[in-house]
Image 1 (tube, helix red, strand yellow):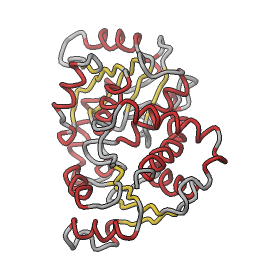
Image 2 (image 1 turned 60 degrees about the vertical axis):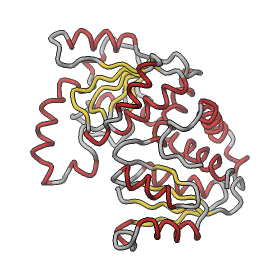
Image 3 (image 1 turned 120 degrees about the horizontal axis):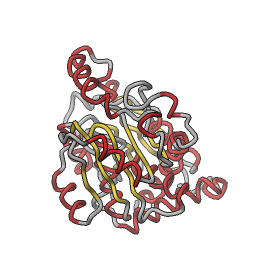
Image 4 (image 1 turned 180 degrees about the horizontal axis):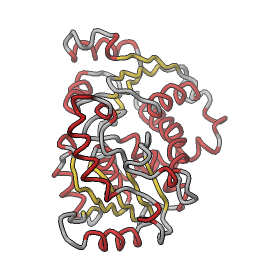
Length: 312
């Protein structure tokens, strides 16, 4: 069993993982020897703070061992991917892979003989979504019936929120004037829309401001993410595209003016670019659950590790 996307996971799989996450947060001492010395490899092409810490610290707190591999210091880029994944599978019990391209992650999972966790690719970010579900459950006491509005660039995080919401009954409304090309997943979007768990706001209409206010007023959670993927934000080759996006997206910034009349929770998967997708004052606003959300990446990762290692 892998975690590449949440689509193959059942509602029961997801809800059990959320409940396990909450139990681990409440009673960490009960899980100190839960994995019995098993080994996790973190194979990362992308930079990371939360996912890396969640994996390394999480497996250690469960009584296992972590081994971090920066892709650039290995032979993965020089050799056949399938060969290297088979080799790595012989050394460790589970792999947390943070890849640039979804297709490469799928190829890696096909070759691996141990469970693979998608720690982020250009199409999905399922570990983030499971941590988000844990945070929503923690603050609202439920998942089914929650209304979440995602405002920003439709990206990998947005896709995984849609996939998660479709399974547990969260209604996700997306307000996205821009879509990352790699994140296009019409099969997912159509399936979620048919279940009534996904809808979008047409940002080309003249009354988009009023419509957005109506959506926020009905939402329990307002969620945003960076408008430019981390690997491109400071890349000189992406500078022109970055400026185009910033100019287009600034009307959709989460700020005090946009949210002044609304009693919703504010979420952001971090890192945040203050003054871009979110104004700095909202990060520490009393409605913000952003740092609970960040902390919960550790507890949810532990639950994911325990679930997948139980299959080994």
